Structure formats: C-alpha cells, structure tokens
Length: 355
Ligand SMILES: *Cc1c(COP(=O)(O)O)cnc(C)c1O
Image 1 (spheres, rainbow, N blue to C red):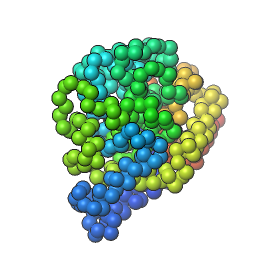
Image 2: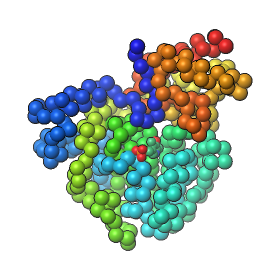
Image 3: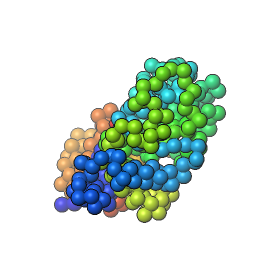
Image 4: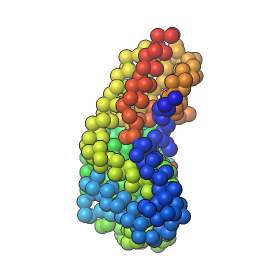
C-alpha cells in the first residue's frame, strides 16, 4: 500500500532525492565508490558542496552581502551559534513556541535577552503581534514557522533592527527577502534532506563584531572562509540536500512551490472547518502552511485513537499530534503531494460518516 508520510521531522523527501541519493550511496558520480567512502576533499564531492551552496543562493535570491554554509549540529546548535557570533550586549526575541524558547534560553548565556512578546499564555496557538523593539537590540530573533503548534508568521515584522530567523520548517516553502536578515538557519530534516546538517545564511558584515573569543567550530567566519569544508561535513545529507534543491529548481522555483503549498493547506483547513468532528488549534490568521494542527471536538475526543487507526489503515502515517498540543498534526512540507492531502481529507470525510 502507498504510504502517505505526514511526519513532522524527519519527514517526507521527494522521490527524486531518495532515488538519486540511494544511487550515489552505491556508486557516487561514476567513481565506483560509495558516497559514504569518498574523501570530502575529492573533486567530485567539492563540486556537490559548491553546487548545493550555489543553488540555495539562486533559489532564495541570496544577495552578495550574504554567505551560504552547511553546518553539522542541526538547528539546535544555531540557538547558541547565533548569539556566540553576533550578540554583544542585547538582542530581542519573540517567544512563539518551544523552539523559540529554546533559542532564548541559549541566547541568555551570551547577553541581555529581551523577550518582546510571548504566546505561551494560550499554549502558543497564535503569533504575538503587538510589541516594540528597542533600537539598542542588535537583532530580533523570530521563528517563522512553529512546527509544534502549527503557526506561521505570514509577514515579516516591521522592526528597526536586522532579523534573525529559525526557518527550519518553512525554508524553501516561500520566497523571502534575505537582505532583511543577519542570519537565517534551518535544520535540514523538514524541507531539505535527512537530519545531520543545517543550512545557514549569514550576512558577512554582521560577523567579527563581538568581543569574545569564539571556538573555531562555532565561528561562522571559519566556515564561510573554508566553503563549509573546515572539517568533514555530513556528506550524505549534503548530497541529498543538493538533490532536493535541484528538484525545487525543476519544479519552477520557490514562488511556484508556495502556490502549491497554499493549495494543499487550503484543502486540508477547509475540511477541518467543515467536518463536525474536528477543530483547528491555531488562530485562523496564523495557520501554518506546513504543519496543520487539529483536534477532535470535545464530544468526540475519545475517538482520536480510532481515527488514527482508521487513517493508518489507509496508508496515512505520522499524523499523531505533538504531546504538547494533542490530537493531530499533518505536516505537509514541499515534498508532500496534493494527492496525499486529498487522501487524508477523504479519510476525515468517510470517518465522519461512521460516527
Ligand atoms: C525541528 C526544529 C528544530 C530542531 O532541529 P534540530 O535539527 O533537531 O536541532 C528547531 N527549530 C524548528 C523550527 C524546528 O522545526
């Protein structure tokens, strides 16, 4: 039976990515060797790294002022790497979810952190909107998509300081004005590749301003200057990332992908709003196009596990909600075909008939 993969992360990858990566694990670029056993300094792998960085640049229209690097350690390492490299005295943070609060915790080690607003009061079910940023803040950290709670910033905030964003679960899902950011970072395992690597876009001018010494592996400048080859990079995830990026380009680029994402999310939210069994958990205006969170209405709550089984009998995998929200979460990243979303919607409709 075909599986419809709604896992939040690691999550669905395109067939193109999986097939090409599997082939390279067997025989990489005609070398007769596995991708896993070839020097990262080989001509063939250096070409992979260079092309992956160039494609990130092309797809997101990254300006000359910024560099693109691939780093190990996932998004969580960036929670400390960002302040280590660019927080001198004070930074502003938006507390919009679990990941944001983890970023805040790390930043506090390095300087004064002003949490300008939080949506914790209502279990992070909305994006806080009315706040002011003091001009002394060196940057304003946001999480553009809150993977766990299914909320998304649909507009970049209008603030007088550079932005820094955790885009782990919405990078490449929509066009972004990179020039407004000092740093953009994203763990790969939502919209790009298997886990083990993060893509980081950093403004060169923002670096070298802090007083503290920075250990080499945590210093963005070291990685920028070595073309992401300071140490052995995670070669298989980087190779897979390149395949996904090529696939994105073939699809027509990020603006085209965004349209498909809107279409997919609309089909699912429309059903949640129509179906008498279900309710969405995120504020309607902040609903994420990537992670769709919903629960069963109070009177049907005991049916949640039955629906889970009903769905899994139809090949639908990974829709159980995060423990901090409960219910269901359907992650519909770029690689998720519309037909899989339709399969879920059909299951919701036919389950409703049985109740
Ligand atoms: C998944 C996720 C993370 C954590 O990523 P790791 O690579 O596991 O460190 C951080 N932020 C967001 C928004 C995420 O979705």
